[in-house]
Length: 158
Image (tube, rainbow, N blue to C red):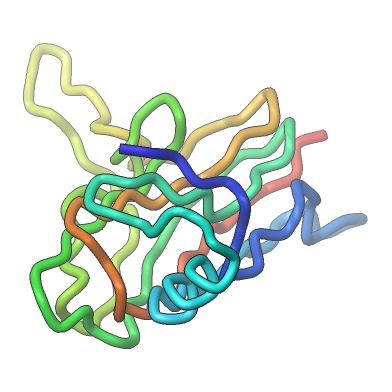
């Protein structure tokens, strides 16, 4: 399992807030077309993505609250593909086990673990980032055809 942070084949962007002034809430997003990523990585003589690899997808600026994260699969993989979305602290903290071989939309929703007391599972209630970080996509199986849009609703708390 390797982590790729170079943005080859997609627009990785920079850690900057998308909203300012009175409205400090915005959406960060990136489209990940794995056919393009695969072709561009090969053309640049870079290592091909494989099963279990981590792809840095969105930069989250310091002092940001991530309110929700979603994934829209617009082109199915054509074979078995499971996708996790998280960060360096929890690889599937936002989304766990999304089917990449089916067109559909997925987003975080509040999940409680039954216990005494009940606890929130993963980042289903959002996450505050005091320091800059990234939201990452893990392809649990190899991906070379899926197209997906990853988005995050963020609030600038600086």
